[in-house]
Amino acid sequence: MLSRDDLYDRVILKCKEFRECTLAMTNLETRIKQLRLSKATWSEWSERYQQLQLLEITADKIRVEFLFVRTQLRTLFALPPLMIALKKMKPLVWDTLIETPQLDEHDKPTITEQKNDRKSHS
Image (cartoon, rainbow, N blue to C red; front, side, top):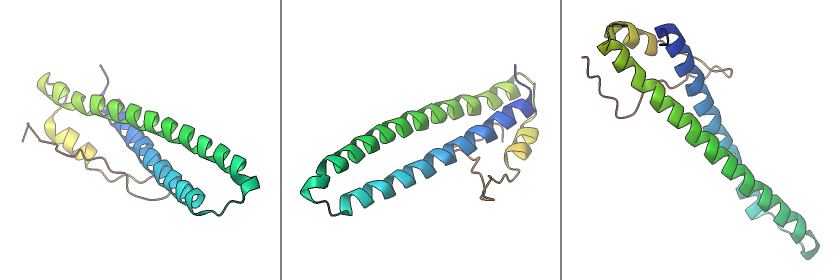
């Protein structure tokens, strides 16, 4: 079984990857708007169509990455209650670890809280 520190490190890594997926989605949205608003002449339609195909592939790739990271996070966040139940970790220790502020490479806070998180050990 993972140590609590290894688990914490993996959670933080996946939270950062999740943030990167959301940033990639925002970037994709901007690229789609630019393509939609661009004025293309008849001769440029084939190039525009190629750009559209590339954007569709990029959207599919981001979607798969997003779903994969989300699934990994769900799995990782399922482990602390199990470790607590098995007396491998105290609830206060995990709460202290996960509430420690983390910054990404852009000095933005990394979100580590789960939505709809119920602290069953409180």
